[in-house]
Length: 585
Ligand code: OXD
Ligand code: MN
Image: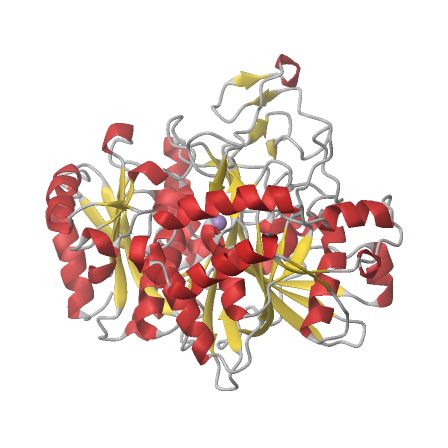
């Protein structure tokens, strides 16, 4: 426990509101966690998996109506609506506390309230930030243990400081119509009720490390981004770091844990994973940008993860992991999902817990089924994973899932042009959020669902950061998802994406030329190494093609998107758009 008066006040206020029967402070002690897992097994909240094959691993099934982030019920509650901006849902904080407070009122009667002190970032790092999550869910407690650093040592690091995020979560009765994910950036507070899905309830992740942290970053001069961080090690041992933003379920975890093609690994190339989802980025004393991964685990999309697509992710799930909404193989009490291998189990339960037969043609795992796995399990985890100051960035990459418009890779002309490139990002939607899948939507910097304030001010913050960074990383855009006439992906992707990263890092050191196009610099086709691939230089030329007519249509979409920001849109971005239009003439 703690003497911190602000922490005690937060806990006591939450007790008065939720009225639990019992309160348990999570100490981080393994015996306490083990007794909670045992309790959750009794109620069916957790199912213990085969201890020999998957030691320390559990299966969890969510409610059928609760399988993804609910963007429509996620709100930014600021005094002025303008501070939330046109992209976010807004609620007046007074109304939010009152109306959603009524839902929390008494919702933990007959239950235990768990108090989880957690740190985003290594405990004691000057970049780290602390939160307290209060919850009525053991699944949340044991998942927070994987995804963050928890327990007494966090309270010790906090001391008597008031600088912590207050997170209150109750699964309550999982009533969809009363589900709310509320953020009060001006109060350092998050309220989440009536959900048990990771992205809505592991409050350290999207709610704190992106929405609240992006607001803190704007005020404190740093950036919280939806980015993986990876290191490419060259044969001479040197490692260069890249941060990359992609919308949800577009392969961030795969890229972060990339296995080099044999051609490269034989020469001594390696890729090290620092993080797969979130980067907190600051200007270092040396004038470069430095990034930490504030998380301690991976909350990855299961379907499609296999020993070919991402062996490192799969191996990360082999101990002390939690699987949510995957298939349970009843013969050996292990798990399976579509795209794991070609042998679906015969005797199995689907994600809903019903008897399931692959022959039925129905999917066994939910498309947004997940694994929660400790980062230290990852065979390619970077030696800098815990480095208090993080790693220096050579390049920033934006990317989306576009069948046609964007070329395989292009480089922005400079920082402001790079911010423009990030701001116009668009991607086809995926199952990570509820709603239609496969619809193209603008997702600036992959932060559309995660900026905790007005997106126009967020753009301005990016522009402003550029004026302060002495040694700026170069900014690129990639698109692994271009398709041919039959709708098949042209670029092989996965490990072969290293071939594109190689070009990017060469550009950062001025070691390779490029061709100027209206949208920025693209590689000369022959500078993308295709040795050992099944595609020829002409195919690469096609992948790098910038079609003026398509981009003219794209400009119309950008105009429309920008229009909603009115005069708040930074003039630098308007200028970049005008330049693009002129170059397309
Ligand atoms: C995630 C997401 O879970 O972006 O990382 O939805
Ligand atoms: Mn994400």
